[in-house]
Amino acid sequence: MTGPADTGATAAPGPDARPALAEALRTHPAVLDAVVLDAPEPTAFLVPDPDTAALLHRSVRAATGGDGDRTDWHEPADDLRVAGVNRTETDFLYREIFLDNAYLRHGITVPERATVMDVGANIGMFTLRVGLVSPGARIIAVEPVAELAAATARNADLYGLDVTVVNRALGSAVGETDFTYYPGNSVMSGRYARPDEDIDVLRRYLVTGDGGHEPQLARLAVDRMTAQNRRCAVSTLTRLAAEQRVDRIDLLKIDVEKAEADVLAGIDDTLWDRIDRIAMEVHDIDGRLLEVVRLLEARGFEVFHDQDPRLVLTPCHNVYARAPRARAGHPPPASRRGPGGPTLRVLERELRGLLAQSAPGLTAPGRFVVVPELPAAQRATGTRDAGVPRPAGGPGAAVLAEAWAEVFGAGTARPDANFYALGGNSLTAVRLLALLEDRLGADVLEPDLLFTAESFAELAAALDAGLRAAGATASNGRSGAP
Image (tube, rainbow, N blue to C red):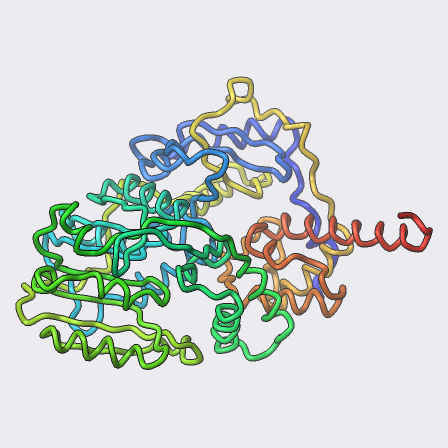
C-alpha cells in the first residue's frame, strides 16, 4: 500500500531556490528564458529558443481560434507535437496512422511529390503522416467540423506542409446536411451518426480490450459520446477536384463514418480514371463492404480489405484499392522531418537530468510548461504566484495513490506523474475509475477528468474537491437545508 507520504503536493522550492532553478534551466540551449512559480504546483515556465527549439517556439506562438477553440498541443511521440481536441484521441490516431500504418498497407504507397486527398481529415494526423515523410506532397484535407479543420491547419502550418484545408463534407451531391459532432470522441462524428448506436459501438471497442468493469465502460462510453448538432456544407469530390485544379489523385484516403458510399457516388467517370490509389474505412452495414469492393473492382482496381483486431466487434473495415496505372511509390520511412528541436516531453527529460546534475540539492519543479514570453515582472525573479492555491493531499489523494500504483506499478504515484506518459489510455481510465469507485463509491469522479487532469496532483486535487462537495451535500441533506 502506498502511504500518505507519497500523495502530497510537490514540496515548493523556497524563495531562494526558485531563482536558482530558473538560472539552471536557462543553461539548456533550448531554453531562452525561464521562471519557476507555484501555479498551483511548482511549475517551470519556459520560453523556447527560436533556433534550437523551433518546434516548441513555433507552436507556442501559433495563433488559436479564440475563446471557442478547444484545441491544445499534444505529444503522442518523442518527435511529434500536434494540435488536437482530445489527448486520448490524439494518441489513438497516432497509433492507428503512424504506428499501425492503417492506410498504407497492401501496396498503398506514396510516390514522390504526390497529390493526396485526405477526406475526413479530423485533426490532420494522416495529412501529417504523408507530409512529414513525403517532401513536396500536395495535400487537400477535407474536414466538416470547424474545430478539427482548424487543428489540421495549425498542424500543417507548424510543420510547413503544402496543405489546403477545406471545411466541408463530401457527398453524392452539392448542398447542406445535418451533422453530429462528438467533442469527446470526434472520430465517430458524422452526418449518419446515431448516438444510441454509436455508444454501443464504442462500448464494444472498449470491451474488446477489457472485458471487465462493465459499469465503468458504459459510463465512459456515454461520457465520450455527448453530441452536438451542426449544419455543414456538402460538395462532391469531382467538384472539389475541379476547384483545386487537381489533375490526378495519387492517393485518396476516405474515413467519413458511414458516409463513404456517398463520397464514392460523388466521383464522375472522368475523375475515376485519374485516381490511382484509395485507402478507406468502410462500415459494413447492409452488405456495404461487398458493394464497395465490387464497385472498385469494376473500376479496374486491385482490391484488398482487412479489419483491425480491436474492431472485430464493430462493423468497421479497411479497404485498399490500387489501379494498374499507379506510378511507383515507396512506403513512408519511419523517420520524419520537422521544424527542429525537441518536443516538450524530451526537453522535460533533459531538464530534469540537468537539474539533477547542476542543482542536486534543489527539488525539481513538478511541471514544465512552454510559453511565448514571461510576464515582465516575473522575468528572472521566480516570484510566487500568490493568487493560486496549492493542492493539499486529502483522503481522495491517498485512495488515488493506491489505485494508481495498482494500475501503473509501485513508485508511480508521484505528484508530477503524467497519466499519458505512463501509458494511460481509455482502457486504463476504465480500470482506474473502477478501482476508485470500488473504494469511494459510484460517481465519485467525472470520467472526463481522467483525460483533462493529466498529472497525479491535478487528479488528486479534483478527487478531493469532489469528495468535499459530496460531503457538504450530504451534510446539508441531513440538516434539512434546501
